Image (tube, rainbow, N blue to C red; front, side):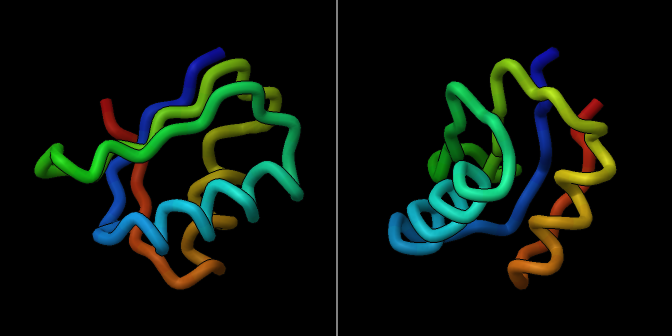
Length: 69
């Protein structure tokens, strides 16, 4: 499953910090944040947990996060 989320991640440093945290806590094979997009889209390929778990985790890291539909 592919997870696509709207975030407020705004810097390359914040992106790297979040990707490292996600990779440490979940099995993700490909994770990317598009800083150029107005929704700062977080895309996770091969997502093996519920999308709500990712939303909660990203919010715990201090970022806004919602499922992008």
